[in-house]
Length: 244
Image 1 (cartoon, rainbow, N blue to C red):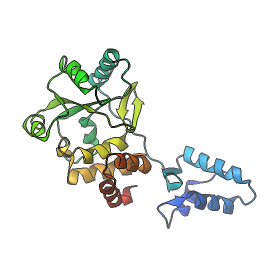
Image 2 (cartoon, one colour; image 1 turned 180 degrees about the horizontal axis):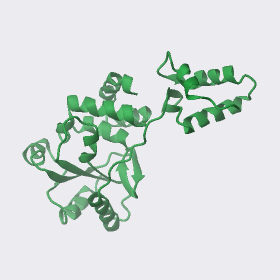
Image 3 (cartoon, helix red, strand yellow; image 1 turned 180 degrees about the vertical axis):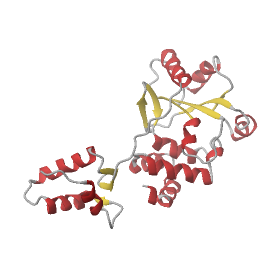
Image 4 (cartoon, rainbow, N blue to C red; image 1 turned 30 degrees about the vertical axis):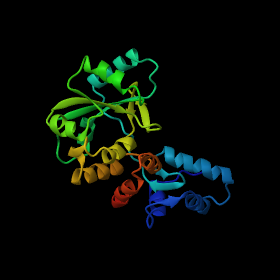
């Protein structure tokens, strides 16, 4: 099979932002009418590997490739995760991240940061006590009043909260962090905690994240549905459809 050029792929998508799987197969059949059906699927895999097309969701494709999310994991965050792993070796549901990661997506840069520690529901108390012994200030699933009185005025703090089951997380630099898909949904679900990233900034974050990174819309929607915010997230995604 001859190599397919970038210009050929761009032509397929000239009148459509997205194409279904069968539509791409039909385009391949026009170029290579004598190939076996199985070879067309292999050709799609090669196009994805070479960054000429990408999955938007199962069976739906867009042209081009985007970056994978690679957060800037600080030494402090890495050390915290390792300490928690050592102290709670059987705690599989553990995820950490820092709101400083959001600065790349926002217009207004904030020097303040919140380190989020999410753990298996029911273990928050023990983890909170452990984190509090080495870091400060630390809050356990803070109420809106605590957020308003203490967290919003703090340049740096730590928050321990339960991790939603089946939340999309990944291993990066040997620590477990949320996928960008999870962070995007959490910003909507925890508006009080992430009040600095609402309104226009929330739209900025969604726009830049969807435009720059290889994200799974099905993962975003599945997690949003689990958190009871699918309709709200769908409206946000629809408003940013040109970035996808």
